[in-house]
Image (cartoon, rainbow, N blue to C red; front, side, top):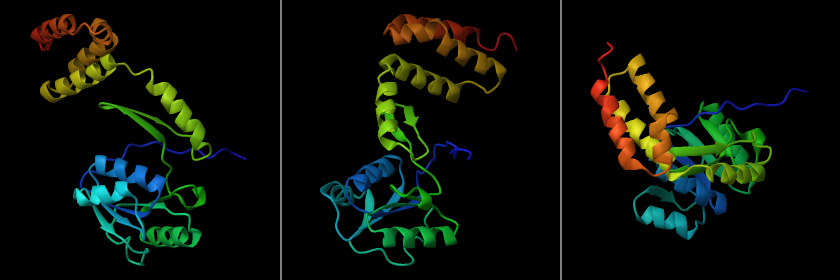
Length: 213
């Protein structure tokens, strides 16, 4: 039997309508992640935690303190389910799939159109580990270990290259310059915290940018 393999993606949910059905610890984590991603989140649950209530009071999500009702998935880009009630989970998944809306049901792989990796962040750097839904605890363990390898200098490199990508014209020369900044001496200096020396080399590289065209 061949192993199931997920296709990893990073969704851009800013401004997208997203439904979360359920409450509890998993819903708390999901809701915080989704509002941080800029989603227009609607939470539906008979009872909610202080975390979700606070986010609602801050205007960061819409809250309906009631049971899930048919039609709640209409108009949503993505649906998340985090409830222990299998009948509710199946009803939400069935309705979402009938409308062509992707759904993730916590701890019920057969009701998932996609799985969620264990995620850690350092500035713009995202470390995500997935076991295709088979071993979430292992994914969390590995994510913590990998995230420990991300130094503040790596965050500076990511922000610097992002800043340069917005200001330099696209093309092979920009690609070469950014690769040199990441893999060369500038990257090493930033990782070591020698920002002044790193910026001196960046300025020198920018002064010659375009001369070979």
